[in-house]
Length: 569
Image (tube, rainbow, N blue to C red; front, side, top):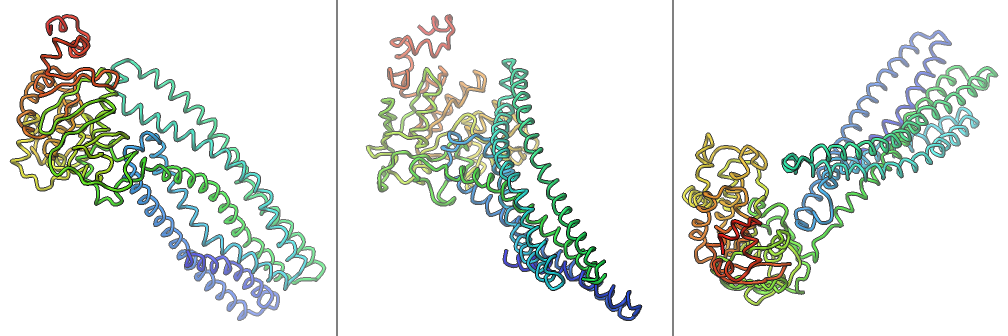
């Protein structure tokens, strides 16, 4: 920025050199008829133009570097912070808000830094022109000293009005972006329930409201743009009229008249830069507030990992699940040395080490909340081998306990890379075993290049059931000490589900596994089943035992089908 300020000052100050050279060419060459002097001053004008062009290019290059560097640094800060915040973020900020900050606000905030070079140069050029004009006529210099600040006084109220209007516009724009993201994400569901037209109408209505707000911003902007041109032009006309009257009375020469016009015309550039700087500062302040609001979102207790290397690879941790830890003890405590029971006082559930535990919840939200507590993605009093889970070092929790959502994010890459995630040492034999356990061998065989077939983001080229089995295979390949699966077979057919149920039990034999599901096929393979009612463990036992003794469990597993419920009796 110092280099940009020096170049900007040199460039704007040198703008006033050419009017002086032109005045000398008029007085010493044209008026006297001295061809040699005219040629020398003309050559000096050309040289000054070349030098001015070089200074302008270097100033622009420097300002562009500052802007792009600031954007890259700001984006890095925001991304690192969002990675650290993780699971708290969706509860504190909408996806559209995050997208708007990353796509627009960072650019506007970085743009403000580019006003430093031209801004400093504009102020110095203004003072230089005032001093030069004083040597010609104190009256003209006084007009410049008073006139330029008056331009700012005229535009300042408009800038304040713009800040208010644009703040409202940016808020509504973020909300509309969030809504569009929600609609796109749930488009298939909306189509299935016939809700596309309803949401399209609502979106169109909100879009029209945003359009009206945009016209308000545009109206203020148009007045500012008009004032930026009209006020300096009026100021220039007044000064030229005064200098012309002085030339007629002989107070200044014709060359000095030309020079005065050039000096004042040159001032239009600094004045324009100053007004533009004010405009950019308004947008930058609004953008900065939004960026800071996003950076103010923090983990519930600030105990998340402090460096990306402290986290397992995101491919094995769902994007929507990151640390929050609301009630961690003051200092870290030692984790259990080996497999240990997990106990959740909120629900009364105890997960026995080395067993396959199934949880059937009346409300799917209760199942997700339980998984979040067991995986330390939400506040809770969960203990692990009698030790508070929130007191264990987070990197160790992440390395030993894995929560796998049925819709966890799939990153772009070859199928082999997607499956490996953080387990880069997994060979094809282990990958094949995980695929077989997830009954996903047919997914590989259907791809043209098998494991080396590239998949796009979210693996959209695969069907819903195929994606779900790939996610399950990835979770199994990670081989965590504790694996928590949330509805791992909700998108597959009954035959595939039966194979997965048998193979999952074999693949996870001797290791702690929790499956949150209402599938009778998975529940029937579990060592222990817990019926979760209103967030609390209502009954615990075997699948067959609960079918006999718990009518609520029987209705849940039958999924509201009276014939199925009767058959399960």
